[in-house]
Length: 419
Ligand code: EPZ
Image 1 (cartoon, rainbow, N blue to C red):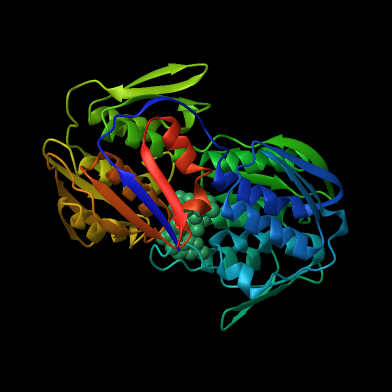
Image 2 (cartoon, rainbow, N blue to C red):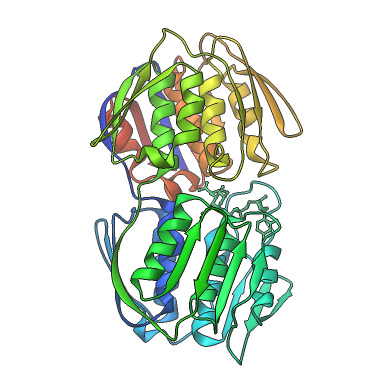
């Protein structure tokens, strides 16, 4: 159990160098298993619990992996297994992203239903149905998944019932070595999808991602390459929220405004002022207070569900009533009870939260229920009066690289220790 201790009330200032995107690094690392020759060198790969676990999965399959800071080199030529153990699958939702690459390369794959953040039901039916359309036989018995396509995958026309990010990523990797053409309609369009398409093309594949439609022409084999991972737009939003909640003024170096349009628009409605330069994005309050607002989450390019917990934390100290509607995950508001312990004033009915801003939150002992809820409690603790203690069984470190060091460098009074 990890405990974060925060003494709030200090305005953040200075600059942070934004980490590489967790939600790009994980699918890209899994996709490296597609290559039969050469090595895949990733630049700007964040050092996180989740990337470390993905590294262990690659090694368990027979890959060679070396890591030097943000540079990770994967040698997938020696893969000799196509099964991922239950313990690894239980540790992370994105373990499911090995299904497409292993099935495409070896014609079979064995793994277990994935664990990960408890945000509500997180089935994998869309992944399975899409792979079946490409000729795979996929069975789920208990929590075990076995997939086979002895005659190889073949291209198909696939329409996703929901633009699932993970399912889109599994379709792309599976289709990259399938026989013929695959068209994925109603696909996810997050920047991480474009990053995966870029990796597969660098490996010798043929993927075209334009908005919600992805076209893939299968090839016989894929080879190693070099790839820089895009910056983490959710971590960027996290630092924006922390700066605004503490009435600070920071520069987030490496943030890409093209990935943050809906997110920045929402914060501008709360009175945020942004300064965009080639260095990154500067943020501060334009007014002496946070304005209330309305936010509805939606698949990209809508307001990201992962930013909702951070927005909620910020709006607990807005000057008025905000309305937050979550449309992607049923349990995104799990952090509500924890924020109420800090003196927030809000009511949640089904997927709508009404947040009445208070003048100041007060420090309290709270618990991180998932990754972004944990980050949101840090934001709340930074803004609160007094000391906040956050009990966390590993969520925060899964998605944020050195969050204590980064926030301390901005002037926050935050420490962490293992209990
Ligand atoms: C990815 O999860 C991200 N994780 C999540 O970020 C993010 O919240 C989510 O996309 C939505 O943007 C990674 O990229 C590693 P989905 P994923 O499949 O792929 C339902 C974080 O904090 N669904 O787009 O699991 C599902 O239940 C994490 O960094 C099915 O019904 O999300 C959910 O309601 C949290 N059947 C919705 O679709 C399926 O087969 C969106 O899920 C798959 C999904």
